Length: 267
Length: 251
Image (cartoon, rainbow over all chains, first blue to last red; front, top):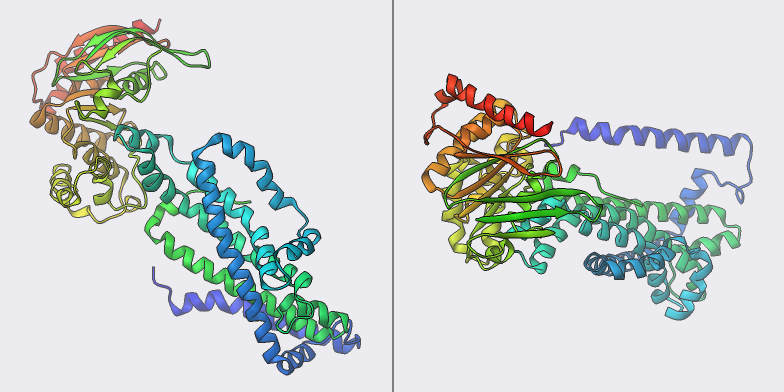
């Protein structure tokens, strides 16, 4: 399946048209009703703020990207490892799973200051918050992928006298890959949110800071145009990370071909 | 293979098999027919050592089935109703799986896989993925995977059940030809009586649940058989006879 130019255009043009319309409407509304810039700045003001603080914005985005990526990578490792443990022992799964749900339900904004206190007022704390927020979807999807194997395939391996390790590496782990990709797609977005929440609690007073700090600082000073620019930067960062994970995931699933269409669980 | 008063009761209280006994000499092609849910598949899983009987004894080559299989005293293959292929592996790597799991050196795989793929007519499809094949071709891959270890005991659990008639007949013919050349011991579960008569030397007829063996019939046609047999009067008569037996067992 080669994507033609027309296909790409069909994919890219509608969102761009929508974007142009939305920005136009935004500009019109702010101009016509003369909305104060500290409430809703016009797109032009946001653009100017972004240009004026370009270097700062870029370095903040880079730092947030680093925190989110590190937290996401750690959750991918730890979540897969926990999934492996859960898949091998029902008892461990049953005794630990309720606490894994804690990761999903805990109000991250409430515990972020604590986490930052424990892991350091800086990059360490930011990574820890991003990690906590993005861990759960990886655990659930890894566990589901490792355990939801066709029972006939398990029997096939048994008839072939496969060892427990062979069944794990040659059957359960490959079976889990599509699920893991699904989990990673959910997690990578959460890791950006986690990094920003972490920065809101952590980044104060440091020389280098991320988008979370920038958003609180600028909105505190009623520099709303700059705050908007920072929010847009964080959204763009999420989109870039999500697109990267999706592309890598599609590459990893290349070998599954039609098999990848099997249902995968998500949270 | 020797089975004596085998019973299987599940924890749910369901009795799947009740006092089943039979002997199968080496090299015989035996079909198991019976209504669905009568425990045919359960019986096959007992012989494969995937399941232990609640009561009774079963031995394959004078060993308990699981031990016979593990000690490689009897090379056992199982063909499931679904092709049960690994979607992330090519046809070649699917077929070589049993060799890989048995720890055979990798450099021996290629020749064996090529040979067995040629047997089932898939020599040109070795590098394809299962999703690229038709249902019949996938079943052929499954058959090839079962044969690559040169098994002595082949257990087939309604392997052609999900296929259309034309493919079913073609694969049946292939299976018959392959068996004719090798003479493995075969247990073939099916609910298609004509298929059982056409392929096997002997038919064990089972009753509805709890499954018992109600008839042990010798198929009166010499092997190898030709397609012409399917349209002969004696074939139809014997098939009707087996169907009768099956029906009487159900009432």
